[in-house]
Length: 314
Length: 275
Image 1 (cartoon, rainbow over the protein chains, first blue to last red):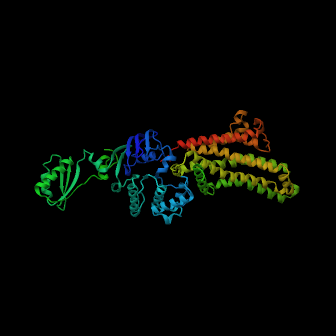
Image 2: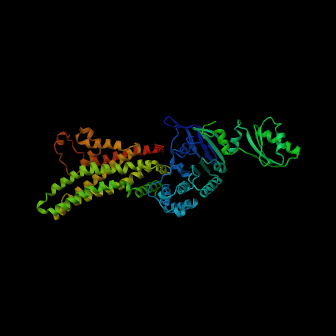
Image 3: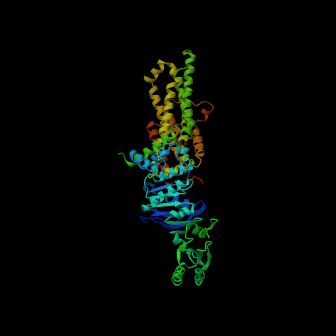
């Protein structure tokens, strides 16, 4: 079992006869990893499995070398912000973080210090002494996040952490994930908001109906979707001339000139041969190219190609 | 600094006490504990108004308290009170969808069970042992100096000690039973009803079956025997009381076995809030 990765080896989980996830094998390296998939695709099951809240029906899971059925070791290095919007009754935000830190065995002074730091980190210091029951949805989301990060875990697992947050809090939370990921820690996020996932993820895991459809860096995942032609946007001074030359390549599927007559959106079945041809055309014709960029190697496009708009795997 | 496991149990204990000791949800448990005290208080006030010529004997009051203790405390107050306190320790968290916060702390689930049990026990002992003592001390106050003499120079204090011990053991035993029910059953009321029927059938069961209960041992430890009124007296199967040196460690051992089983169940428990 890897000491430096989170690994799933042939893991399946069934709820009675209902499939949670089936035969999942994957490795999650440090950085920000997003779990993407429609409702019921197995994202929460995967998160609950890696935090030990549920057990696999078969297969093995290791979180940095520790099996999740040893909470006394696992929960020192894992923080989980679960989807449940429920809190122990009668506690203030400060007490909520403080008392669960005490269960780590820390001293009063250490718990106070870490509680204050966690509240500060999610901008909840002024509301810390109010009852959690009186918090807004966004504040409850932030206090859960504070509780998950309070013990400074190596692995942070977050189930739909951006739900209910206003744009400002959302930006601050994303900054926190980035900061955490940049430190070489593990941030595993599930989200429906694909463009935000796209902004923050170092790698993605696409799930559908309990199966891992694709995993890895998003550009890598996109290049493996062979049946969908790659879209590439070229901005240049003569898009019409460029389109005529590029159609010599048999892999070219479609070309569209943008309304401002400066952009050319191309679809090709072979990106590598396209780039070679483009280089040759530019050299031979003296074309002035402003930019060349893939137009559909984002999570949203890959999600549409692999899972489809209706949520069923293609 | 104390060992890690002790600090962790202490943290659970204090959090649970903070959450549950004066919670609104448990108002009926406080009423249960207060009920016998109110009855004995009313009895005292009533006897004071009646005057000394209408008093029954101290022996009568002693038997009244023994009956009150057996039928009200053991069969109702402590039984249902412990059901309310202990079966909610885990089941309540599951209903409120907050158990995962505990499961996500780096503590052995066995310690979590121990911490929650001790918190429930602290509440139950305070309420029910306290209520027992208050009711005992109030019941016969109208006898004045005779009551003081009975208490300090007669069997009074020893009886009080026995009742408090039995109430405490009742909390220990029923607490362990209901904590386990709360962990193992989605609706702990069903096993609680089964236990209730079983415990109340105890006087009518054969000798061997009698011993598979908590009430049998508790009854053996009561200082004053309560005569069973007819027509039930015909159906009662007489049995020798268990000596104290067996009853006390026996009850503690049963509670320990139930707690160990609960700890094993907690170790294997998963978070499934039924969504």
